Length: 489
Ligand code: ADP
Ligand code: MG
Ligand code: ZN
Image 1: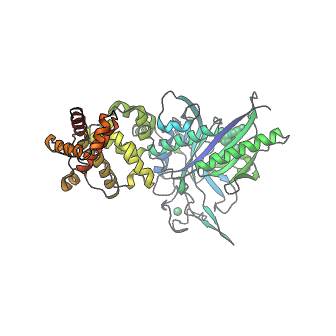
Image 2 (image 1 turned 180 degrees about the horizontal axis):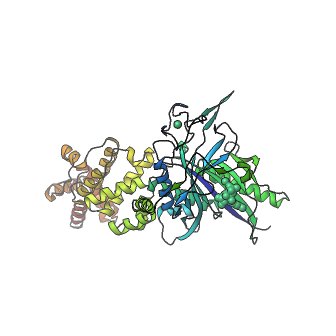
Image 3 (image 1 turned 90 degrees about the vertical axis):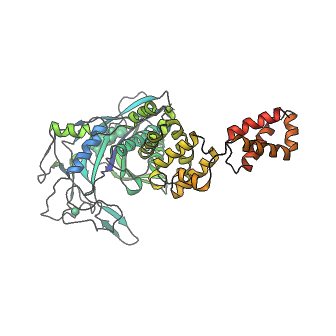
């Protein structure tokens, strides 16, 4: 049996992080009552005129710059004609001839294609560049909701500003597709271009996929799976679709260029229509919108305000805070986590310790509660103070862990809590010695087994001393005292 190569190209729609719609002043807020955020403009009434949202243009261009695109000095809007209830004008305003951004690319890391590791910033990676064909600005269509006996159109989503990022057919596995989407999303969030909240439909992809026999240059017939809004769904749809195409070709079947939809319940893709051609849409320049001309000066002002890319941030965090690459990868994966870490590390000057606490205790609590760092009561100030208290041996690790859990939930500052409750570590040798003597006297069996060569018995004694001190003893001093005493018995 001959082997098949997979080719994937993505068209990803991303809602821009702007307050108002693309041509009118209606709100882009999510979750409003159906059709509450509408006006004659975004309802497509004849006689209304569009005026382009400046902030949307800035974000489209910012996204393009973050992805290394060439920015057009002269851009135009076109009408894409089609007839469907989600588009009351019977055309969508988009950019076909002269989009804002051309070229560019997203670098993904292949870890022998265990690409999810890219998030973890693992070493010895190879990098693959997924080229971007262009990025254009366009309006979203309305949302059609289907009910038992009728369907309803919600125009709140109509005319929401989006960019569409179109790649070249450069991905050759599901893993690469996942890595591309993950990296793209991360960059756009870093850039403040979009929140890319998948649950709110802010990031949706059309997935183009084809296969061809190994050794064949020419790409195979492509199928477009429309409007996928979860990464998991995309992965599952690709798995199914690749298998379906291979099965067709190996069983004497033929593939047609078509648009399919993913049915998550059935776990299969289903044909929607054979692929329309571009000329069916009758693209032509929108006469209601003037071309957007960007000056060199304007573009440079925006460029100067670009935020750091996640990859640059990882490298800088390693340099600036002396943390391992691994830590930097985990922390930089979510911008909000990296911001939190940096704020805390700057305050206390102990990068590695802050990173340890964040990556173990705080990340554990985040994943247990399903919260984002912005949603819990912890502050960078509190973490910095905690690290300082542990570093200065004012409190021990056990106490610190308990404080982290408490502050995560209820807020507060560790210093004040330690003071109010007398949680300070006991490091006074005389007091600790008395504890050790007491425990040794009360546990003759452990002492016996220690003498018989079972060194683990010393650990038990240390544990008992910690307990006796209600967890406040300095474990290092206790350990030292216990070894000394046992050795001299
Ligand atoms: P259209 O203009 O019909 O939408 P494009 O040529 O612009 O078609 O391609 C749309 C998307 O499909 C792009 O992301 C592109 O990379 C991808 N694509 C094109 N040809 C193939 C193919 N043979 N296999 C997989 N993806 C493809
Ligand atoms: Mg297309
Ligand atoms: Zn409106």
